[in-house]
Length: 243
Image 1 (spheres, rainbow, N blue to C red):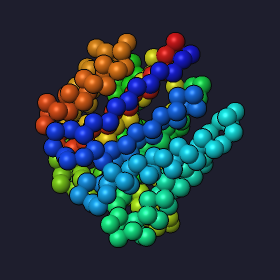
Image 2 (cartoon, rainbow, N blue to C red):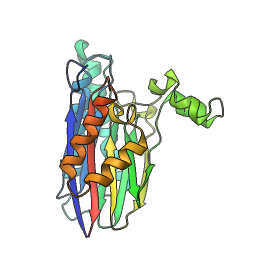
Image 3 (cartoon, helix red, strand yellow):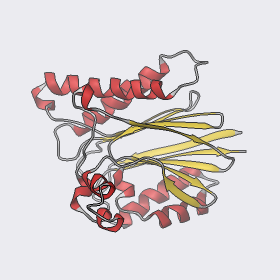
């Protein structure tokens, strides 16, 4: 089995700068995305500091080490602490924050750790399933039965984060999980510049049409978000587990 990957982070046509960040180490099977908190000070600083800190923590482990879930969580918590430290010590960075998804793929196991509303999806046999849970107020209300799934999708609370990097360590409760991969599976990591504007059915169609060329698939997904008038930065990272 082989693993192929391709990712791209794009400023989009509305924001002044790209506050998303992406880091990949294919030889170690590490894939990370982060979305700086829009409207906050220095979101681009937060996301880039976070992904650099997280990938550094994982790359510092022995090369033959198979990452476990605690490794991913420690990397995310290190990233959180780095963002919080800068935010606390520099007035111009006060209040900055970001989301994060860390994915590790080794042999047939995909392990993930995330905080915020950036997402990880699994495409298997033409079915796209979100494997992360958004840390938003709308998602929380839906799980409490206050909102229906349809109401949650269109609620303004969909953009209110209840968890993000850049706060005190004991306030961070990242989600972790493991997916056993099958030949032909594809994993998609993305910021809400894609997931908030492009229907999952369209994502499936694009991935089906261009799965032999991940680079083209990534670009077409970004173009789809632009056609849907995405008002945010757009980050797309595809990881395929193939024969």
